[in-house]
Image (cartoon, rainbow, N blue to C red):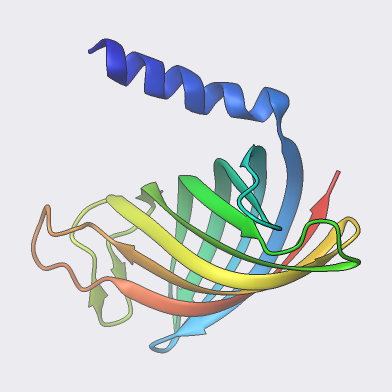
Length: 164
């Protein structure tokens, strides 16, 4: 129990000491369109070699549509982020994360997601220059098999980030 409390306290402390970024993006996959907006908090952790490894949280609201069907997704995603050369003018980076999500409807077109509780996962790569970044990412929304059917939704997304 104490480990769980320590983990939650550690994750909630990240926003106070971290780099903050506004992230806006759009994506598509399997006939569905998505639009998302969120805030990311990254805290430097280690500097392996010439790179920088960071951990953090991403909070996001997304709107999905498939024909006449739509839904809202709210997510909180712990993530890791690796910058290849943080001292360079243009910095390549990779990131990944998975966390809980809530959706407003359990159907989107032919997809039956079965429950409002979902897991949102993503992995991507991008380039940062100064306060700006551009990333391509693979996203997946699924209930992880906790209820059937579990069709899930996968998409590719393009995101713009602004650090402040």
